[in-house]
View 1 (cartoon, rainbow, N blue to C red):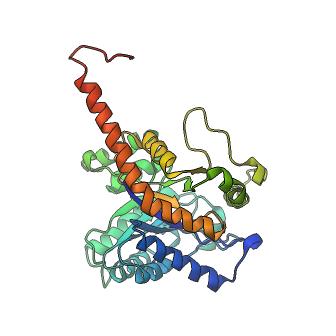
View 2 (cartoon, rainbow, N blue to C red):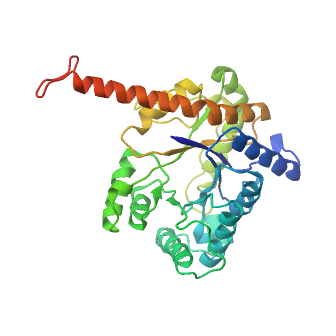
Length: 348
């Protein structure tokens, strides 16, 4: 599996650094990840966050593209309902040209009413709009509706959707699903069939709630305040502009959480590379996952943890994932070879 890193450029007041310095340092992290072999650099979009969550992912992606040579340059995600399709198609094409054909675009519908209000967009029809807008961006590229067009033909597209409706939209459009979920995958395949696409071409990726450290136990108290800030902004922001009550604030003492009984991901898991490889293989089994995305930083966490996370994700994890997958495949083959037709393997 390929690995990439996501940057949201948060700069909370508690750990604030001058904005120009913060952006410059983040570009240095992108260069470091590219130099160490990361397969992707991903950027995301939100508006009106007090901590300055990145509002212009394609602008930053263009800067990262100019400073790197090998990593794919992606959005996870950009919100097409807040942009004119032609403008979005032009901006994305420029990034693809600057990067030499390394662009991947992940689209999402968004979930915050204030963002839609800011751009005079209709929140209630966001899923209908997002399907139409993704299709229009692709049409503009394919039919020469904007100039210059992207270098790649086609540009790889992803749908960053977490529910069954969005998964079906991604399928109908014939794009990748930017969500690793066995439940959503079934809806995604149904959408592919509905849209006339070969379900065997399905592809899945996701931002995993994982960061890597040599000593997770020592890293936790240093990361927990940043994670509490991150989760509080997501939780509070999700109810702004609605009549839903504000959820209670989380504190650093709420992390790490106890492991979930069903084996699903916790809010964040800080793991060694070895434990991460085993955990990822367990959670992705049976899905056509080719690329994984990890947080580069959690809401302004200390630079030394960011650098080490980037090093471990880029350099150490891919080999371990390959080893774990190979061992799993060998074990399955051995079990099959040891059972004659009609015979149940020992222990089952």
